[in-house]
Length: 303
Image (cartoon, rainbow, N blue to C red; front, top):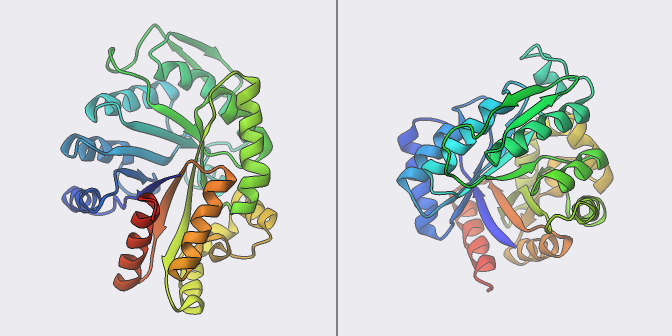
């Protein structure tokens, strides 16, 4: 299982570059960033990847509703060229409270919307001509959007429910997960995704998993802190369903929180469950963060 780190893109771009360089120099060569309410993540990754050429970069994830597939395909292909072909484009549906409450876009039939969206986006990323006339998504292109001579970025979709996992396995390179515990990945995510990929004749899918992680001697205080900072995720229906499936009651319950030995054990469990890449969401004080980085590097180096 590959180890990656979540890259914070908030604040001035120079600070983001400093963080990315520090992580690279520490031994981490795969960085993932989310598109929430801050800077445009793909633009930031284009700058980071152009300045630091030996990084693999990914979005976990870009919400699709505000972006027509032709625009997202052109942007992703442009970033792919700028950073030397090392982009993983993770896309997702966001949440009803955001899509309808902030953007004024219907959240009706989200899985059907994503199916139509991917029918346009996936071939567009490969530089192919597209003609999609769906109920919610229509898209036409005559050929490659953005740069012409560039390999398609790896495409992943945030998928938690059965329909979305089957879609991800059939038409994309895999899935990007958040707030999904090891038991759920082993018994639900991995087998559903892999079966769909097999039926479609596609390679073994990628499973990129992001979870809170803290190496600490004070589990109680750290658990309380993680639950406070991530409380909103426990209120969103898609993540609630994953926590319930796991038998968890709070975000910290699915996190990797504890001693060095306990965290290493959880990392091995994630790998055994089918996770191909773990993107660490590190929190805690400076001492805890340093200890967590050390454990992640030790795992990556087989120690």
